[in-house]
Amino acid sequence: MDPLMRSLFLLGALALTETWAGSHSLRYFHTAVSQPQLGEPRLIAVGYVDDQQFVHFDSDSASQREEPRVPWMEKVTQEDPRYWEGQMLIYKGEAQSYQVSLQNLRGYYNQSEGDPPSARVTRHTAPNGEVTLRCRAQDFYPADISLTWLRDGEEQLLDTESIETRPAGDGTFQKWAAVGMPSGQEGRYTCRVQHEGLLEPLTLKWGKDEPASSSIWVIVGGIAVVLLLIAVTAGVVIWRHKKSGGKGGNYVQAAGNDSAQGSDVSLTAKA
Image (tube, rainbow, N blue to C red; front, side, top):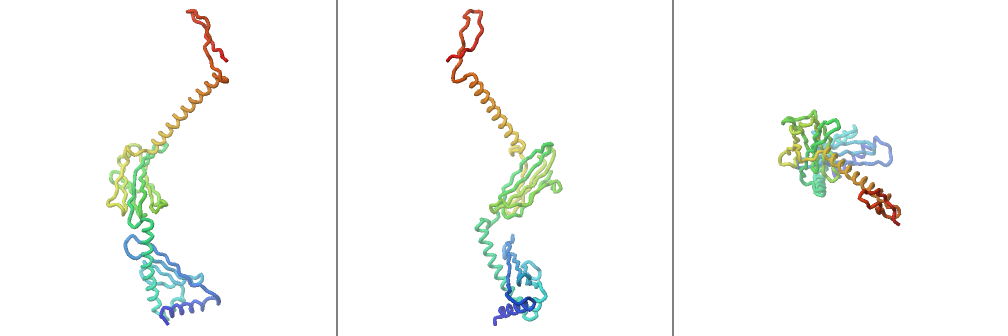
């Protein structure tokens, strides 16, 4: 009998001796995770007899071998040490197969290489007058990125607010980091963006050419006020025209006294 088949038969026999008679299931669950560096992906595998986990394997573990999770699995090593060697050959082949699959997936999503981030700095003003500069990076892959605020060249870790890197829904990621300051201090702050898709870190500052969020709202509010005034003015003109015109008639100035002294002027409807 083939050594691997003999080991599997032994495994089944040992498992069944401690379970109820009847039908049973043997299942393996494998997870492959791509790594930043080239080479085989990380492979994690767990095996179950019915609902009981009996083996575990992690290619990043120090032992580099399948580990038993129940006492009766130790008997397999005693009866046939080659079982572990056979299992390692299986995992080795699967890791190589998963490496090809992961490379294909990265190609399908256009992620064969890093896509560098696009970044910008925006300025936001709170009702109390405090200014916040926000450094936003987007359209980057992979997800690992560093956004750091510096004041006069020194990192501002404690005063920085940021969000976790989030997927953008198209295979890329996005992230922002913000720092607060009194108005007028914006020029002292610099955002540094580091990502493997960049040849060198990006250094960004807020400039007058960058629209501030408060300015945008002022512009929007101004436009709204102008439109409202136009609408009110148009409504008044239409109302006065309808009131003066009645049912389609128009008004003419009635001739009164033609003397040089002048006369009272009245409006008389003309049918």
